[in-house]
Length: 292
Image (cartoon, one colour):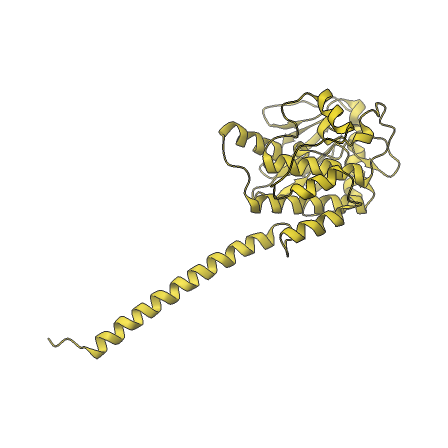
């Protein structure tokens, strides 16, 4: 029987059933907290093997011992948002919000196309890499085919139909996942969870009544409300709405390109202006030569 995991100052993350330990600057070792949780790691391994590599999902490298070797990323999106709260810093930039939203939606689109439902969806399970790209992570409590759900989602990511499902007998669907995605989009846009000042029981009562935070004036406000009120059938529809906000958006590259094009246009214009001024000065000097 596998021994319980031993932890050190290289601990990167600690969840309900597993811990993630840094091996080096590029890789990390995910281990079950106790032997009884080894099945959850096997579920995650099975999910990674089915879905293959995807640029919006943390990379699985290989199994090792009773755990998994994964790519090492910087830290959870939630940590970044909490740091912004603590520092009193500005909200994420429009381009960041659009990029993260597309990356998150593309990640879930890939999962759902392979009959995988993460279930425990939240900014704690989205990691940022060194280029500030968002990647989905942690599938040890996820559902694949007719498997067993191991971890319940956070209250604010729980669809109203699941709130009183104490034994987790109701299987997640695209709509329940999209509800949670709406919560993620809200948190990353505002840096706060929905109803941040209320306790879980109050939030559950509000959700059961169909009452959600106001998103008027927010960049993704309409999308968030549609996620919360079951207006979408799948991630494809959400992506279509996102493209209405930023046509051509593709996991952030279009946004980055547009910023480049604006800068490039400015620099090109400035260069042209300098050239014309220089040419005019040369012409003037030729027309009025100074005699020594």
